Length: 115
Image 1 (spheres, rainbow, N blue to C red):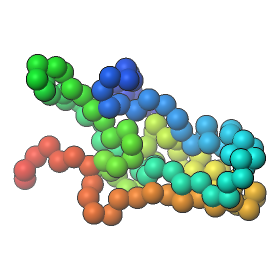
Image 2: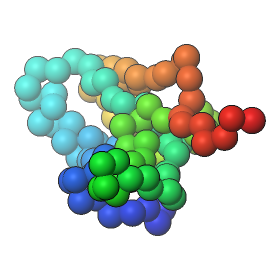
Image 3: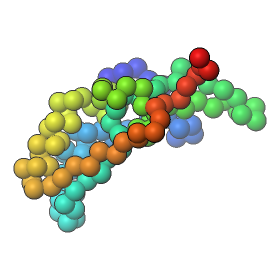
Image 4: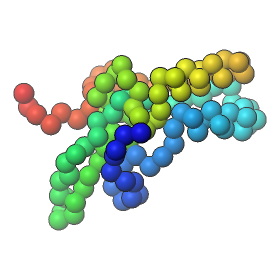
């Protein structure tokens, strides 16, 4: 996996959960009666190397939620790999379930330059 800052629960950072975790819980999800699952955009996200201060407190954040796309053609290592996404899709289809990928089409991640 990628080398990202640790999740503290204090600042908005990735705090776990991935595609393999969904695959491992498909019996449970299907058992609750769900026919489809909707996941956050799994695309490669910006990881902020910089932090800033707000009211004297250090504030660091990453694109942990899937909505700060850096590359729409790659899967973020936090979430898994293309193979993981293909495996999830195949597992869902074998169960007659569907997958909805959320996506953002009106912007990419944070822009740190005005150029």
